[in-house]
Length: 243
Image (cartoon, rainbow, N blue to C red; front, side, top):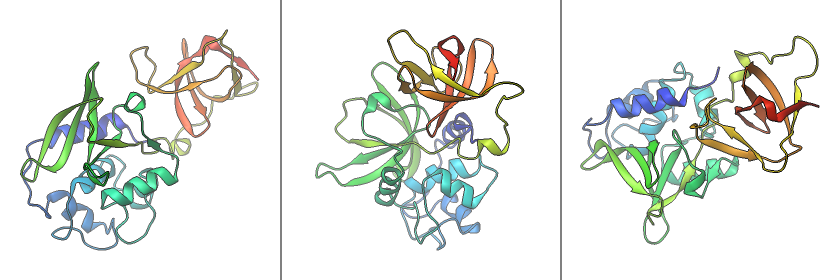
């Protein structure tokens, strides 16, 4: 089944105001119970990255291995407990976003010092025409806090996007009662937007060029749920034709 990033965001927002210490939190203690990082982290590590993993983990049925895979984290010592490791994993899996204009709700945002070193992370919970609203763990005196950053803020290092749909096929079957489930993007000229959900106000995941092949997962009337490369999203069905 897929992980609903909206629920992950809701969990993060619900935790705003929690107070921990510099190296201890209820999030690291909770993940320690499941040996999420192989070695205990509560009392031993800063927990900003741990907070993000916690929000995903509790919305993924507390499945350790599958949550690690969604977050691009291998089953190795200290996996994902630090910002530097997490950035490396996202980049190695092709799920790193360097341009703020391509980031969206649910993405993990990373921050850098003036020398370029990544030191902190949070979760994008909303955005508007000026910038991002972010919930961060272990900030403002070791609290969970909500903050705002403009798109041009020099502290933004980039974003990681978990593979929310990695296990979706286990719960959903492609719509294939008759005919092919393979479709071709059939726009006149412009690329077709793959969106996070079936609405013109939904964030754009990527642009699909004319002639690109997609797999139909679900026919939703005006909208279609499709798989494009490794991404799953929604697009206008009228701009698709059977391959």
